[in-house]
Each structure stands twice: as structure tokens, then as C-alpha cells.
Amino acid sequence: MRGRGPSLSATCTSTPPPPRARSTILQQQQQQQQKQQHYHRRRHRHRFEKKAFLSRRRRVKAEAASSSKEDKDKEEEKHMHLLEEKLSQHGAPLQVYYCDEEYEIPSFRDTTILIRSTTPDAVLSEMRGKMDNGVEISTKTVYDEQNATISSSSSSSSLKKKSRLPQVTITGGVFDLFALAVALVLDQEEDKEEDVNVAILGLGAGTCARLIDDLYHSSNKRVKMFGYELDDAIVDLGMKHFGLNELKEKGSLVDVRVGDALENIKTKKSDADDTVKFDLIIVDLFDDQSRVIPQLMEVERWENISKRLKNPPSSSSSSSNEN
Image (cartoon, rainbow, N blue to C red; front, side, top):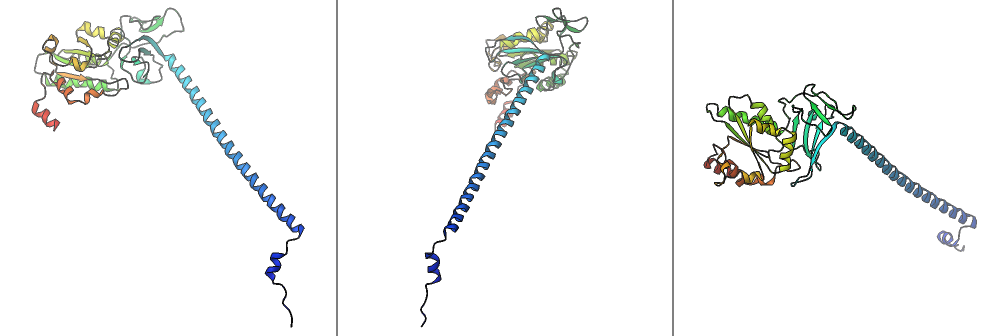
């Protein structure tokens, strides 16, 4: 009877591989580890290089943008001429600039503007063209009425551009809407012989007042304006650079009251000026960021304003609006 030999499984598990086979397996494992390490090194280096590349590209873009902005600012400074800077008790310092005819923004060419130093994009007041009678443009530059040019006696390379005399020019902003509202009042009061009284809450340097005077100075009725302005520094600059003094001399601008417009417009029996009733009240009250002031969100403020109108809204209509 034949005996059984050892099983195949027992033989495979118990018999170790020869030394040569073991060395081959170790070499394969080492090669695999080396490949993995090489792959991870390449991946890490690629990520690092990509990060460095993106960082370098961002830096180059930022430098280019900064350089472009500096060039733009320098080019802008060539055509913006600081006329005066004045401190204000109600915000950042005020600056008056003259933008010549080569200024990059067409709507502000040949225009005098009033801004605050911290918010140059928010124009508080503006005036197209130069006023006549030799108004001084800067300490060394003066407007020549006869030749309609701006020149300087100190340097031939200084500002010397032809200029137009002031004319009726719409601003393209909210001032135009305010000025056009006067036409509605003139149409309603056509049969009456009384002057048309217009109050401007937020007179500024007089952009709206000057536009109204230009548009309606030849009408059959006289438009008399009363200005209310918080900042006395703005009024001073308006008198010097924006023609407010001429409006007062003509009688178009009857009075300018400095202080809180919403308080000054209230009816006070002790104040003789409060006997004046207005056909139109223009409310041009914004903050330094050109946002409507929060006080105008209160109904009581509008009620106080409406009391100064010649024909205030009836109580029934106001109550229906509140409901």
C-alpha cells in the first residue's frame, strides 16, 4: 500500500524562497518606494512652483496697476490745478480745483469743482467756464477777459488755454432736476405778479442757484433765492470761486443762512425772516459720501419744511399719505 506524501499547501508554506528570489523581491520593493518618493517630490515641487508663479504674477499685476494708477494720477494732476484749500469744521478739508480743457473726463473740462480731500469723487459744487472781470484762477495765474485766455506772468510753460465765458450748461446731475422744478412753479404762478421765492436747503457753493439764475433770469417773473448751508467754509469758497457774490449783488440770491438747514427752515415767530413763504423748497442735503442724510427719513422734518410753503399740503392729504 502506497503511503501519502506531504500536501502541496504544506510544502508551499513551509518551503522558503531561495535567496536569489528574496533579493529580487526586495529590489522591486525598493524601486517602488523610490518611484513613490520621486512622484511625491515632483508633485510637491510642482505645487510650490505653481504657487510661486501665481504669487509672482499677482505681484507683477499689482505693480503694473500701481504704476498705471501713478501715471494716471500724474497725468490727472497736470490738468487739475488747485486754487485753494480751506479747513472745515464739518468734515475733511475743502479743496477747489480748476480742471482745464485737456482733463480726461469730458464733463468736467473747463470746470471749477469743490471737493473734500478725503472724497475726491464726490463733487460738492461745480461751475462751468470761468467768470469774467479778471477772476483770479491761482496765485500766479489770472483770467484775461479781453483775450479770453488764462496765462501766467511767471512762466511761459504754465497754464495758457482758451476759455469760453460762462453759459447755461446743464451739469448732467441732480442740479438740473432741481433747476427744472422752478419752471413748474413759474407755470402755476403765471397769472400772479408776485416774485417767485425759492429756498435751497443745502446751498453748497451755489451750483443750483447759479443754474436757476442762468435759466430764468429773463423770465417775466423774478426768481428770488434763499440759501441754507451748514458749512460757512463752503459759503466763503462759493463767494470767492463760484460766483455767489455776483448772485447776491444782482439780488437773485437774497440771503444765505449758515447753520443746520432743517432747524433754520422751521417757523419761529421771533425771527422776521420766517415771515417769508416759498413757492418752492429744494432739498439738496447729502453727506460727504453723496448719500441722503438720515434726518430726511423722519416725517416730522418734512412737515416742518412744508409749513414754509405758500401753499402747504392739506392735512387730509398728509394723513392719507401716512396711512
